[in-house]
Image (cartoon, rainbow, N blue to C red):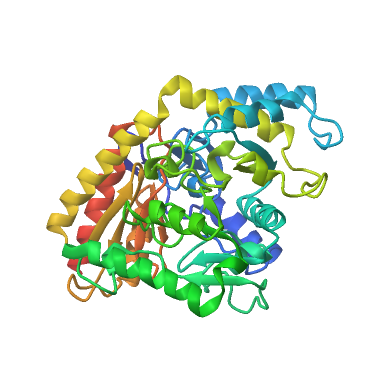
Length: 451
């Protein structure tokens, strides 16, 4: 039955007949590894609204998995893309360079956390940025080891997958993995092993001691090229570490001559309320990876860092045929224009405050919501069967997400237990549109919790 609200407009069941027909073809044309989350076929999208080929319009809080911080098909981005298509599509920048690459590098370098000079190089995907950050770190330090964290997600290529901690569905049966990768615990205040939430400083200190212990048991610090860390874990469950964590890690790496790579693929471009999340820690990393919202959906990623570190590899040792493609760099410059013209960082902070207030209000009445957490507009709820045991409510999470979709709201889960519902809404989502989606979420959680 059709449902009509201000923004959501449902004209068929989900999936609709046109979508189902294409989904049936998809099963025959693609392998099972192409897992489909939403049983709908997209027709068009703009801002935070998405319409399928059956005419159903949804509020999209997935943001292309964090890619659309300026929203679907932003008018400024569309214009520069149309202009670029009319001019040229490809040259291979290192053979025949173009100005948009240089301009984007200059503008991003000026935003390097901690200040000081920086240089940038562009690639195609977040995983590719991570792979190349590791290459740069090894070339500069002449060391091999890389330390990553539990629950980390850094991509699905060989090195990136080796750094990723989540086994299912990303790593199971995919070994052997890249060598010289080591693992340490990442602070998870809600599920701290060492202390209750009321004494998190104890948890912090014990967690940091465990990181040092992990190194002593696995690898000599002088053999580590770099530590790679997410300022807020994304796929790992939107886990926000204590504010002391990154400053502690920065000092630890400096004490041992280890480079610090901050993976801002998901946290970057305003998601946490500052352009890069690292800014909030008051530290200067050695290298920073970026992707996702850098170009509003056009494949583009990058590595930014201290010039002397970035110059570790020799001439032409880093690159690729499509890296820093002209469509991506043109879109990237347009995205930066949008941030400046629309004050998106202010909007991100307002969105985050609004989400936290609404979700904490729900939590007060719904014990299934174990924790509301976030930084800026990077906000999530963790669902549990019992507040004391904190047993993950994975089945209930799946039920909620499925019913949300049927009611016109698109959201995603994360976390190693599959029990975290996250918001990756475009930063310029109108607050009344966000409220309409949250009203549906609140109704749906109450319904599932009641059962």
